[in-house]
Image 1 (cartoon, rainbow, N blue to C red):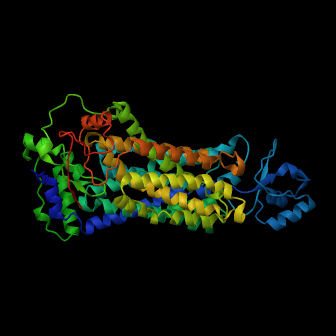
Image 2 (image 1 turned 45 degrees about the horizontal axis):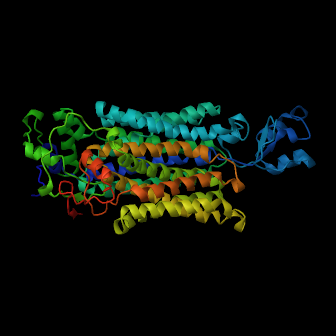
Image 3 (image 1 turned 45 degrees about the vertical axis):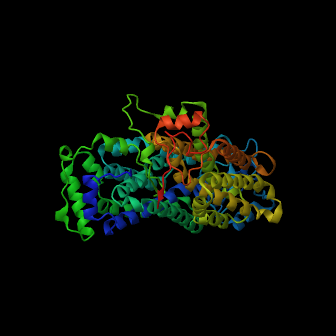
Length: 571
């Protein structure tokens, strides 16, 4: 017996309005725009907190009181290095990256502007503040996932998204006029919190588009993230003498999108219908129909009390219907299923930790997200400590994210588990070798290992959006995915602090931390992970825990007749 469910009244009306026409393409373009912009926001710390060589002004053979006003400006803001050296004469100290104990003022090498050079943060107790400014961005993003998500469910997608967009635009604009590092950190927190508006707009698009095309759209939108990073590198190169001008350039697309959002972004008709706002939902669907050249008069939604009530048989079948994030519909073998009875206790996150084996399995999933994210953001933000040309390295490490989707292709050939574990192992080995190649080829060999690490960590990260939902039971799939993605945010918060650790030969400690994290996670997944390629989803928490207890977690096709399901795959 195959699973057949009638489409909801909303779905049939959406099809009548057109579920993949010009209206949906417009929403996809808007999503690509804001996704690339958020990529710019995420990458800007590479330039705004860029370090530069310096020396202690206390080493000068004169005091500031001995100089004329125009000469003092050369010491504080040495735009012309040749003129500055002629001022100092034979007492010119050499630039370097070593802090001098007891130094009160540092002079930075001309040509590069950042919050470190402007606010004198290279040494001392404030040395950690630039890394903190990057971490608070991701911490705010992490907090916003819970708050903004709940607000959008309560007040609507567009209202919350528009409010976040206004906050992101204003905070970015004010950042241009920062007077100290603490103001900068506070504004980056606001920007991180408001950057979630891209996710809100994605939800609007996802609730309006044909579900069968959603996976490919999601992959396309994520690749566009790289465009924002490349834009940041472009302006970072031509405006490297002023980090304020870099933020100025970043405000322009924000204001453009703000206007586009107000006039072009609709409220989610699906959300309106779920809130029993039938007339407004019909209005949105009719507008979509007109844009798609469909007949708007065919749009008629039923009131909630007019919707047909499904039978108990359909309800029980519906609890076992599966659609994975890779747009492969997994059809259950209904002959081996029994009717699910009502349970008084609703499953929650703690249900995933019900047994020792299920706990290890859940932790391996969480560790996968943590390690992939840690290496990804670690190599992204530590580009200035990799040998070779700074801008060339930034370009190479960014471009390598585009072909990283080949890892997702490989997982459909060789399997999810094997592809992920091998990717993580090779990535970790590359990170472990990277710092020790500094003496070779003037450090230029380091970028090769960095590209390998970034390519595989980005591919593994992308792969988890498909692999992880396939591993958790239907009843807690969203909960499990949220828990794991939270671990990725913790990693992105930690990465800026880890790369500040200057210890070991060739400052190898950060890269060794990345390597150890990846190797341990790879081993854990290899021991307790599940291969999900061509396998059926786990449906209930009880099945999940039972297979864990009987050590059947590695193979979803168990010999137990109650659990075994031989589902076919439709692409």
